[in-house]
Length: 74
Image (tube, rainbow, N blue to C red; front, top):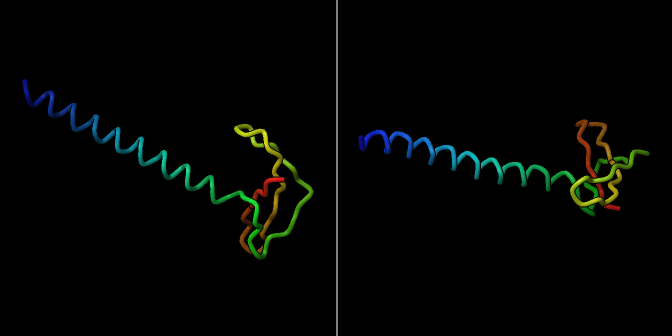
């Protein structure tokens, strides 16, 4: 009977580690895509979007060499 608790306990710990780890990875990935200082090589586009979580207007910049997009807070 104790092996059942150990089996499900280990699965619960693994699931908890995955949830916490994914939260930090998602947060870091999102924060690197916008800010106030535009990196070198980015060109301003005419596109403006509104962040649904903060309701801030974001100006879209595009790097033609890499295809990466950057969002500057207005």
